[in-house]
Amino acid sequence: MPSPSKRNRAARSRAARSREARSGAALPPDLDLFCTTGVGEDTRCSLWWNSAPSHDGHRVGLIGRWQAPEDPASEAAEKLLRIAAHELRSQGCTLAIGPMDGATWQPYRFVTEPGTHPPFFLEPYSSPAFAAQFERAGFAPIAHYRSALVTDPGRLRTERTNALAHLASHGLRLRPLGDVDDEAEALYALTKCCFADNFLYTPLPFEAFRAQLRKLEPHLVPGLTLVAEQRDEPVGFVLMVPDLLQQMRGEHVDTVVIKTLAVHPRLSGRGIGSALVNRAHGLAREHGFRRVIHALMHEANPSSRISAHHGTTIRRYALFAKPLGS
Image (cartoon, rainbow, N blue to C red):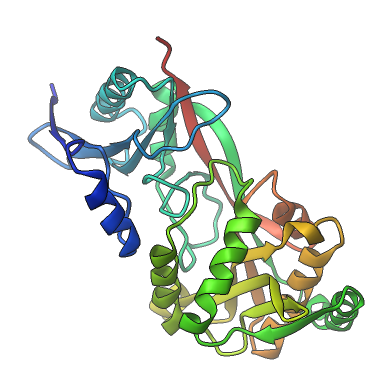
């Protein structure tokens, strides 16, 4: 029978947490848990409650950094999730959500429908067994996500002119992303504004945002990431990176991943997001890419509705929740 152990980090000071967040480090957990059977892989997770977002009147506790055997019926996984729920309840949480490593700007979601497409660059790929383990422990999906693949190169070429004309009609011009340190402050302000209403959103500290941009910079193709400006103010951007996992598999890199699409809320409902995606498609084709992946879209977000006009779903994911009661 697995024996539970835990190491409590709740005593870490708020000042220490703040320093780590400003430095771009991952948000430190309030508690680490693990179960061990003495044979095979340990089952581990971490919990967050002090910094977790609220949801629908609940005090939320997060379960993340999930590590378990790839067995849907794992007894150790079920036991650890039961312990995690008990710990979160003891801290006053009324809803457990997972997997989420402290915030949506860290890895979260489990794969639920893997499909046949191999993992792509920057995708938080996971075994579908993990989703089954959460469901077996009484969790149910609280949000659904998908990734889609666009494979129509003819359409990528023909959309360019219409996209540019539509953007120009709203007084927008496009330019390539410049040096990330020069761009970071303006893009940070834009993302905070654009994503404020996203599901379970919590603001990313500026230094962490800049650290993420710096980490991505070596993988960016010059001219392939676009910024939309209106009267010299950034009001949207689309960030694309090549699927470098193709190269690791010994394949020719012919696919680009749209990682982030952002449009200022004051421009919502005007087709700006669609125009940015259309122009991104054309730009990908001009750079020699034959396929585009629209990555990790919440199914209720505008980006998913935009993608539905272009691509075929290749993977589905979910975030799970369990009421904790009193």
